[in-house]
Length: 476
Image (cartoon, rainbow, N blue to C red; front, top):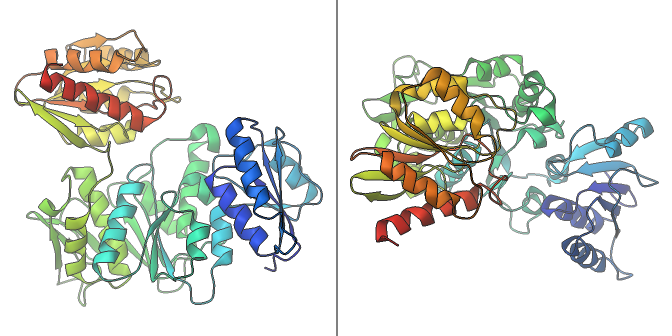
């Protein structure tokens, strides 16, 4: 596409919106950025962005319109949206009425790739995306490849594809929001880790959410990686229109069959990318090389290994990459052991699917849970975890939903219901959990809910938990 003198509307003055505006204006487009906010931060960003293209010798132009995110500027040839904007936003309705295409920043990055650009190895799923993508980047780096974990994390993807020093291959995390607005992506290989209800208020239904996740497989050239324990991911592979010769490759926590990666006697093994997958298996790493070696994290490692192997990476690099990988904070992170009780921060478990995976990694557990439920129900989660629970401490706005599920499915489990949202609430929760725990137990923060009722984000919630645990350890 020729960008010179195109009139492009960018929806959102966040990181991805600013990246898109800079890149497109730098190619000669006339860009109008629209955002409903009018805060001091918005004003500062707007002034800085507009000033960068104020000189007469700049290729394109940038105009920022604050306080009105609904009206389509005239003229507009293309709308580029930030991921969080809902499909039913008035701006997009106006674009549809005018016959103007709406795409996301990831789609723009795909269209801006230069000739001979790096292949994309893509990852999506309800949970585990960031960990898997970063594991994949660590493995690719161990193989001596210039790479970066990008997309829904790290440097904006547009900036990466236009970088002066080219990459060999990219590890790309993609959310369902991003995939919704990315119609022409054709990855080298891609993985869907799992599917569970999430963001249904944005997508409208589970079917629409799954369909957007499935876009990641469209046009794959080498491998579509799926989770054998989650039939919905395999169904997405079967429905995808891929290039001739592209293979379906499964990953499993059990012994792998042909065209699968799995676990045998404490080893991660490959029966997909070997000369004779019916009679051969290649050792990739030990389970102990995965940090932490919780079941769902081993699954993440297998998915990352499958994508790396699809790209031709040797087994040794899988092992070395997994050993070098350090998980991000607040993802089943051990904070301390006090009087024989282990305290684990999994504040990132913001939905029931993630919390179930976390609860399955420990036994017995004193569970700290609650927050904003986002429409979730907790019966299945409580039923699956009931025999692991020593006790439960509930916090947050929607804690009653979890309490009611516990009353139905785990009535004998002691429950402490904390009716407070002040800054000391997490400290009180940790103290209550300590009182319920016995030596050998794990106190697990796996809220199964979003954090914004009490905290800025899940990071701050995890930090509050860790601070409270450290204070407990020092007797402060």
